[in-house]
Amino acid sequence: MRISFPLFSTGVVMALANLPAQAQNSALNARIGQLATQEESKVIAWRRDIHEHPELGNQETRTAGIIAAHLKKLGFEVQTGVGRTGVVGILKGGKPGPVVALRADMDALPLTESNDLPFASKVKTTYLGQPVGVMHACGHDTHVAMLMGAAEVLSQVKKDLPGTVKFIFQPAEEGSLPGVEGGAKLMVKEGVLDKPKVDAVFGVHISAGTEVGNLNYRPGGEMASSDRFTIKVHGKGAHGAYPWNSVDPVVTAAQIILGLQTIVSREVKLTDDAAVVTVGTINAGVRYNVIPPDVEMSGTVRALSPAVQKQIWASIKRIATNIAESAGATADVTIEPYVPVTINDPALTAQMLPTLQAAAGPGRVHEIKAVTGAEDFSFYQEKVPGLFLFVGGMAKGQDPATAADHHTAGFRIDESGLTLGVKTLATLAADYLNAKKL
Image 1 (cartoon, rainbow, N blue to C red):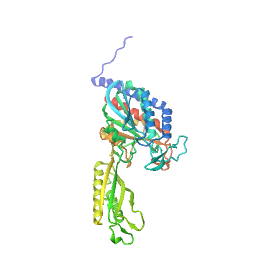
Image 2 (cartoon, rainbow, N blue to C red):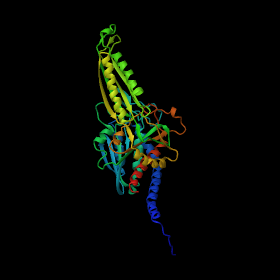
Image 3 (cartoon, rainbow, N blue to C red):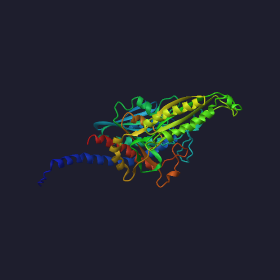
Image 4 (cartoon, one colour):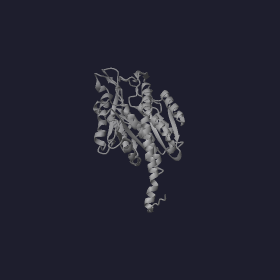
């Protein structure tokens, strides 16, 4: 049988030439979704095991061992001991292309779990001299499990990946012991974004207050910077019965605390950016009828732009110094930058939004308001374009007001939301790599 074809214009021919690649990407994403669903029981089992055996920052040796063994079994190039206990896996696709990184944090918190679960943590430790439990009270166990799942999914489609995927399993996101460097900052310092050089980085965080099946994101400043400040007020001690013989640092400290509250209410343009200045500790004296010579207080600063962050630093120093001077005292102010603002690259966010919508489905991807919590994922974003998302982990139909908050003893996750996290991570990597090919 002889078949004749009609002639096409140049524009139509070009459009048709693109169809195979687009269809191929669509088929790849469908395959990724199918594999992610098949991985659900494994991901939940990994999560439960890690939850039952939590480890504090820079102590995640058991968790790191599980991850490294899994990645080696998949045939990845594996590096261990990165940033103390971190693990990095490298998956090379079947074709040349860019490098994309996917990140999960591994550490737990010094907190005693109150949940009645068969896999609840019973681990105990001593933290800063105090006996305490250890618990995955922020969902890092789910992050590890989801990224392990994404690694297994992508390993099964690697021939269709035009580029390289770097899997970063990071320790100490919640911070290290005082004076001990760790977390994303140390991993970046040790070159985790190099060899091969990363072009973009993606990460997810489980959300106990977001219904399963949903994804939340925000372009630009999504999560706040986090800094610690310490103010030491030096006065003159005296008998509590004769305060006129003192330069009372307690009264002076109280005035400084009140003065600091005017920074956000009177100096920061809140219609543009939210900010927080909180004094969390104040220590002075040992006896009720003795005015001590010194007071020390500490607190946190949260900001959603680097400019506001630096403005607040300057205001704290000015207010504390001048109020102390007006009372005849002196104040030493120390500000320790901890975590920068988590800034989702606007162009990358816009580029990957269709991927998120395809992964979660219609009406399940939401742009949210900024969050004053902090995330050291921001250290990666300082070096390369990055996108950080929230994955729903609250049971369907539950009132968010009844969900236990992150960093609390009753924190819990609906595990049915983990498959979306696996699918999202894997699809983000695949779509980013394939976008360079189209």
